[in-house]
Length: 116
Image 1 (cartoon, rainbow, N blue to C red):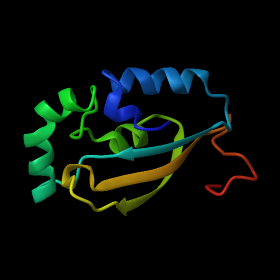
Image 2 (spheres, rainbow, N blue to C red):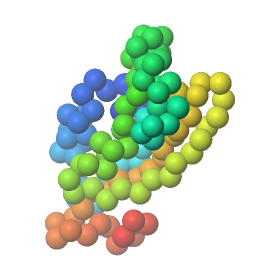
Image 3 (spheres, one colour):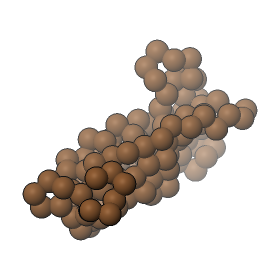
């Protein structure tokens, strides 16, 4: 998934559909720019610019906490890495790349998977 949380109107519903389609042991690779930490100046900027950014960027929302939504999917093991991409668009600075694996029946993930 690339920027699903940024563009999808109803992120929780989209993730439920991905989960429904994913077989046990299946993988979801994701890359998302996400909402910055609570209380940070970048988060305040994200909240401020989102109304015009979502129009200028064809529906992309810079103030969504996509990582929290992905981690909240029941039965998914999630591993992620945080990057600062820098540049002039500070509201897009925090970027998450990761992998989610749907647990197999019995609670485990694939034997050949880095999360297991």
